[in-house]
Length: 416
Image (cartoon, rainbow, N blue to C red; front, side):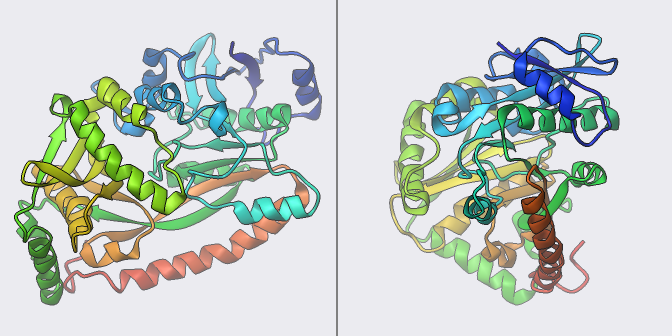
């Protein structure tokens, strides 16, 4: 059953007396502002309620990773549950018994699958005799894609602040050391910073569609040498007669998931020791939201030998996982980056987000952008140390950003 809490913004931290009271009882404590309930499963929030709080177009969530169906697939497959260190603690905010806000949140016993690394912070607190875990994590599991986390359709800053305050109160009740909301929009980072949360930045590489009519149209914005390199890579990747097919919706059958999962397992085993996602998760994607999936499979004749899974948003294609059973030069670039650009141009999408890290994307037309995360830390000593660290890290990241921008492959005056 969801546990009721209350939230009365915009205080940055919960009064100690209330926190103690909640530790003794889970009865609703209704304030004049908002009431919050904590949901230990995604299913305990009806899909219609969840999705009504997510930015949407014509009733469809703009970002596929915020769709109730995506969280449901992660949970029902066993990929993101208490047993794997991802215990849902979703905060549903209500005003006058009407849902007005949502913060997808997890109580975690580790820092895997997040892509904003805090292992050093954890080690520092443990060495000092403290306990970093459990912690609260506001993110889409295993998904380094920017998406709002303070889901308030009205845009009310007061309601967003109430979600943050409720998370702090929940941290007290669960004995969590800290709260981390990762890959948030800059506006959410600014709001959190205004109530004394810590802000962190990092870099990703995104491709931007400037109304290109074709891939060649895009190439014309690049320096001549860069155009030649990309054309050669595309030619060499498919030189042996390989073909790439795009599949979406009902076109994706279980045989395609079987093939892709073999590719994904191989990559996951090499990168992480074990993959985060299991085979059932992909079948559930096919059942719940296949129309948001774009599966790109490279074939040698009738046999798939490599593939990448992408998710389609209202104006963005999100590249996620890749794998192959054959090592073919430049096939990774072709399937993950160039085919994604082809798809975005063909379907009028504005952006391709190709996942975390990867400076090699820069030479292929993907531009550096800043990503944002926000952090609340209970331990005063650790908070001071992390604040000092982030104060030094941010200008270094921003300087790196400026340096990377000088290495983009665009002709002078073409980068927009």
